[in-house]
Image (cartoon, rainbow, N blue to C red):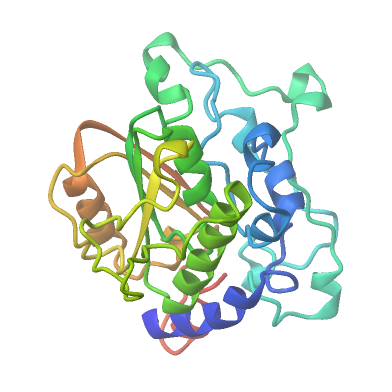
Length: 300
């Protein structure tokens, strides 16, 4: 199953258009409520690779649960579902054209009238304000599990600021190549004269070895965002010391992880005491696939 996931994302690394049944790129960012002032700091070609299913940076109402922004709109009438599960089709486009043409929208239901508003939770169920706010603060060390093309990684770096540090981790070498290209494009947009990501030239004309895990800083004192490193690894065995991160984010990845309990244990291990986890994902509403159908159905 892990190999099937990696194989699927070879095509996604070239671009997400036509490979998911939900909006991607700028449409996905806008529909999920990303702050335009934040995402507009990324080049358009980088934003085009966004294919997340949620917004791990969103602030939520601390005493409304589930937050209205997390409640999906009802599926369109007559929209066929996968194996009667209530989840429409496969997230990749190996589905009938009728399903591909079905409208899929992001957004909340807050404009539907007071009768549809989410009820207020009892005060003892309110989230602490520090958990309801955007999880990434200036100076934070952030881990993006399943960073993919790196759009959330880059957003986290802008939020963490020059005193922070962001690590993007992904099991797909092809997606990491795309993330490196997106990081280079973002650095180049900030300063077109920057040298290649992770290297710095010297007078001999040879590259110097990287002196620290993040490599030399091409932006130097002009940096406005956290430094970023990209690491190839699965979520079930993270190659980081315990207590390394203030924040872990993940967007649309846990549904693809085979051993989810192991991944959660690893995230708990690498988080510092009092650290924060913000996870956005899809959930299969229905029986889990069995037998030979497991691999073919893993992407529902």
